[in-house]
Amino acid sequence: MTDNGPLYLGFDLSTQQLKAIVIQSDLSIVSSAKVDFDQDFGAKYKIKKGVLVNKEEGEVFAPLALWLESLDLVLQRLQEQNTPLNRIRGISGSCQQHGSVYWSHEAEKLLSGLTADKSLVDQLTGAFSHPFAPNWQDHSTQHECDKFEETMGTPERLAQATGSAAHHRFTGTQIMRLRRKLPEMYSSTSRISLVSSFLASLFLGSIAPMDISDVCGMNLWDIPSNNWSAPLLELASGGSPDALRAKLGEVRQDGGGSMGGVSSYFVKKYNFSPECGVAPFTGDNPATILALPLRPLDAIVSLGTSTTFLMSTPVYKPDPSYHFFNHPTTPGQHMFMLCYKNGGLAREKVRDVLPKAESGEQWETFNKRALETPPLDVRDEAKDKAKLGLYFYLPEIVPNIKAGTWRYTCDPKDGSGLEEVKEPWAKETDARVIIESQALSMRLRSQKLVTAPREGLPAQPGRVYLVGGGSLNPAITRVLGDVLGGADGVYKLDVGGNACALGGAYKAVWAFERGEGETFDELIGKRWKEEGAIQRVDDGYKKGVFEKYGNVLGAFEKMEEEILRVAKNT
Image 1 (spheres, rainbow, N blue to C red):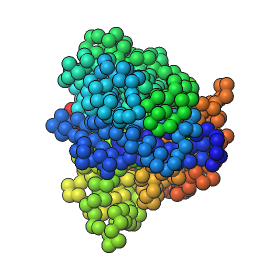
Image 2: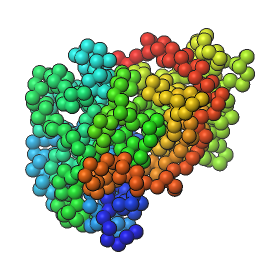
Image 3: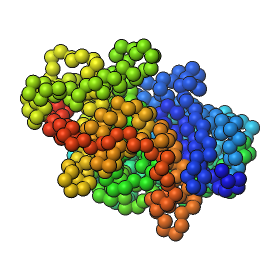
Image 4: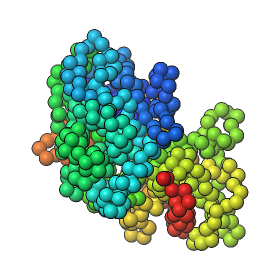
């Protein structure tokens, strides 16, 4: 590490942790620290997996005080490692998408008047009109979702305007519901932030604007016209669109540059330099695609609490079954995303009913069964039926189906004869089928956006990059490669679960070191070293195996449609 070069700080405020990574201009990591919400504050805030739950109404939310305490703690931990915080030139980061923070009329005064002798939580309690932030797992807004789609005419028209159909977790429907449920809170709200602009605001000492990519996770931003949607503001605000527009503020168009210097609180308390700037923060999914320079047709699968499938594309082809966002750094580019609530948590549920391994390793039995089971559990195509299933322990987003488990079979050769099974198959079989189910959903919904990587191959991604905790699991990586393909292989990013924080740190480097007109991909591409950053974990496309899953893709889609008719979220 050079003794006097500039450093950059990236954050990731996710559902269960707050992570911080410090890097140099050459993208090498200097230090990192994290706060685990359950481990560090679980008893104090009565949280589980980072959130509080009101099951009766489907609400899932996090206490803002938890995040304030965590920010002070993660910075203390960086200090304890003797991280030279005085050399940090720029800060950016990623935060869980779709959450919203409601500021009081005292917020600006309290943010600008922070003193180093007290903690953030002690000084900012009065800065919020609502002490909680809705979480992406929240599913309390079906009524509002219906109204959003009704206002635009169809889910397709809503997606054409905002990049997505209506979704429970999206901020516009959350705002509309909270305005109806807590009218006094709403009227006493001066500004509304996304979680990303909330964290940026703490560092700025004033309320930061939302960023051009994260704002697309609200169902309120009209992407083609690059402005707030007038009819949707009218709806969400209950007929006072100008008031809501004022609460939301202007959206920052440039993903780079500095929004201002870091607050004196951090200068005096943690020895940050007064010259340190704060770049726009973005959502965790946009930050994930910034964790490496993606090539055309490459895909990223994030295997965390939720599961997401991401691709960068210049084409805007919205559809109700997936999401489009503005790219977080590159105007004219878009980000295609699939998001599933039933990701890591669902895989853990299947794991936990299996017999425990003698070694005590949690995943040993699950992995053994997943790898021993052949694709679709078909050993003899002439005799065996292919097994398909949906494992939704939480109400799912895509498709919009209630919590439940469904198991079906069909002919493995062409998907015909689809029928629901009367008796569940052996629980050991579920280990492979749940991974296949999640991957088949990704393949089904991304098939229109991929092409053949080269002559003689079926349409599929070029490379598939895996990030998040599940990327460390050999059974999951193998089955994903079987289903999704990946003509040039499946790779694990060695940053593991730190991809979002690293994407935020890379964004800070680009924000403060870019040349005139220099794009993120140009700057990071020159500095990013593939060697040591990624590890090939599977061959990806396997001739014959990939085609087997293609044979039942239509049956999988039909299964979803059948279940949707009887178990749609309402």
